[in-house]
Amino acid sequence: MATKTDVTEATVVQTSKECPISLAVNGEERRASVPVDMLLVDFLRDRLGLTGTKFGCDTGHCGSCTVLVDGLSVKTCTMLAVQAEGTQVTTIEGVSGGSVLNALQTALWEQHAVQCGYCTPGMVLSLTDLLSRNSKPSQSEIRRWIDGNVCRCGVYQNVVRAVESLTETPQ
Image (cartoon, rainbow, N blue to C red; front, side, top):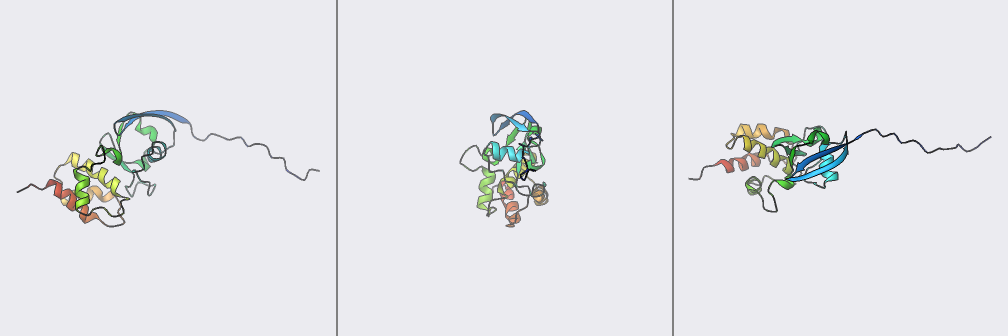
């Protein structure tokens, strides 16, 4: 009678199939093979090292993972990497094209619309989408647009002021 149970090597079952993808990220062509169930946020952060895209709620409610996909703001925790096939993705690292802040980022800085910075990348990308659609949004439009971006520091009023400062006509 055996006192020890024989343990055989368990067979690992592959639960997700790999799929090749090709997309442009911040203007650079990227090709990879990814699990079909990999989220775009994980691809950007873990595979490409673009950690400016934050991982927050995993439910699409906080907006910290927002990027632009073909110019439209998208929450990457609700999009699979394979769904980005053939698209142009812009992350916060690609917004200004370098170490110099763009006009929106500068306005947010000057209006004290950044605190801890966790929500800032998602806010910048959401507002970039808004301003590409409407260069002079009203306060209510700005507020509606950032409604999907949660800021625990509460800089919403300063964000509105920053966007308004971009649309003011010099006198």
